[in-house]
Length: 112
Image (cartoon, rainbow, N blue to C red; front, side):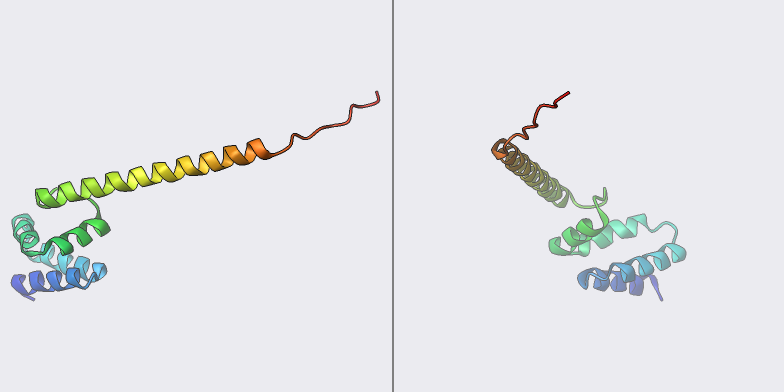
């Protein structure tokens, strides 16, 4: 495959959310051209924001992503963290209420 065909195939696999296919084509591109980083930056620029966000959700934060996508991902991660903290507080509060409602276990004094 030519370099352009590989880039087009990578784009289509991202649109289809076929991450294994994307990685396969990416490896082929690296083997074809070890100096592929500049091409990847241009490639990311051709993707829609939705596809870039899906890419970042799957592969994690990437320095090559545009700044507005990075900011979106930071906001999204902050919202996830706040939701996790809220759920943890709810679980703790429910456990404490349950613990308060339990009657203490009374033991009979031993006859020793």
